[in-house]
Length: 340
Image (cartoon, rainbow, N blue to C red; front, side):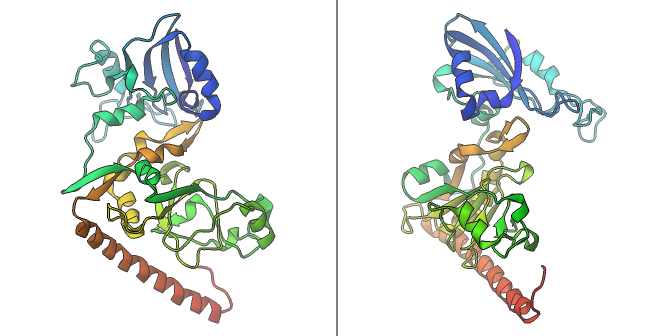
C-alpha cells in the first residue's frame, strides 16, 4: 500500500494510536517527506507518503526521502531554482536515487536502521539531520539541550496559556505572544494587555512567574520558531502564551560554564538555528517544534574561560538594553503614557 497522510499522523502524540495500528505486524518499506507545497494552493496540509506491506516483518532498514521542493510554489506557480531557468523539482532526483537508496552520494534518499528509529517520530526530516555534519565553533563540543535538563543544569516549562480574546486590550498586565519575542527581549504591546483577574485565571495556582535571566524560546509559530528573548526584572508579572518555552539555568556552577547569558547566545547561534528546520513538524498546517527542542545540540567551549567571555559580552549588551528600557519608562511616566 502507498498512501498519502497528514504529517501529524507521523509524529503527533494525539495520533499515536494510528501509528500503533499502522506498525502492528506490518512492514514500513518507505516514507517520503512530501514538500509543503505539494497540494497547494488547493490544500495547505503538510503530508508524507507511506509505503507499507501488510502482514510482513519489519525490514532492517527503512527507505526515507526528504526533498525540499517539487516544482511549484504555494500559489501553484512554477518554481525555478535561484538564478536559473531549471524547475526546482527534487522529486525527479528522488525517483532516481530510489534505485540505490543506501548510496552515500544521494542528496535526498537515505536508509535508517529500524533499531535506530524512534517509532513515535516517523518524519524523514528528523533522521535527515543525522546525515549532516554539525557545524560547531572551533574548540567547542556539543551537548543536547535535553541532557542539560536531565542533569539539572537547566529547568524547562511551558508558557501559561491564552486569555479570552475579548479581554485583550482591556487591562495593564502584558500578554506576551510569539510575535512579541524580538531582539532578545519581550515586547509589551499595549493593545494586548489584559485585566488582573484574567491574568490570575489563566496563570492558575501552579503557574510559574518568569524571573530575571530566564530565556524564553518560541517553539510554535511558523518562521519565528527558535527566536529567543531574556526576561528582565520588569517581566515577572507577564502572561506567556503556551507557544513559548521558559528555560532557566538552575545550577549556576555547572561543569559546562553555562549561565543565562551564554544560553541566550548559544540558542541564537548558527549552530543551533540550522538544526531547527529538521525538528519542526507540521500539525496539519501549523509548524511546531514540540518537545524536540530537547534534541538541539548546544555548542559548549572546551575551556570554561571561553564561555565566560561570550557570556560577559552578552551580559553587557542585555544590561544596556534594560537600562534603555528603564529610561523610556521614566519618560512614559512623565508624559502620562506613551506607546513605543
